[in-house]
Each structure stands twice: as structure tokens, then as C-alpha cells.
Picture (cartoon, rainbow, N blue to C red):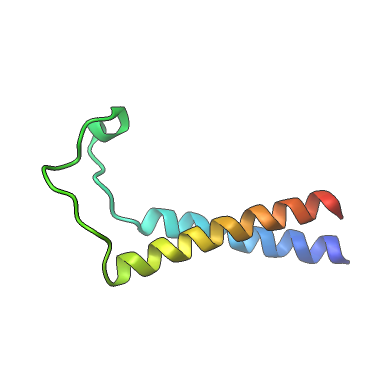
Amino acid sequence: MTIDILAFIQIIVSILLVIGILLQQRGSAIGSAFGQEGGAFYSSRRGMEKKIFWATCTLGALFVILAVLNLIF
């Protein structure tokens, strides 16, 4: 029973994590994949971008914790 619940929660968290990663706006030029700079200036995260970033970090940590719990149980 616990295994089913943990697996279900991990699936939900992984879907939310993928959505959070896709929502983040980054320099998506093909050159950025090979180390080129995305632009001439850097800006800090503000507003919704900051909330999405922290939500993605939290979901990533939660995913790792759930993965470890699934290994233990």
C-alpha cells in the first residue's frame, strides 16, 4: 500500500517537475547548448520567473527524496 502511494506521488511530482522545467524561459538558441552566451547582459530572476525557479528546485528535491524512499521501502 505504501509503495503504491509513494510511486503515485513520485509520478505526479515528476510530471510537475517537467512542466516547471519547460516553463522556465532561458536563452534557447542552439548556441547556448554548446556554451555560447545567450545575450550581452545578465538579469536576476523576478516575479513569476523566481517563483517558477524555486518551485522547480523544490520539486526536484522532492523527487530525489521520493526516489530514495522508494528504494528503501
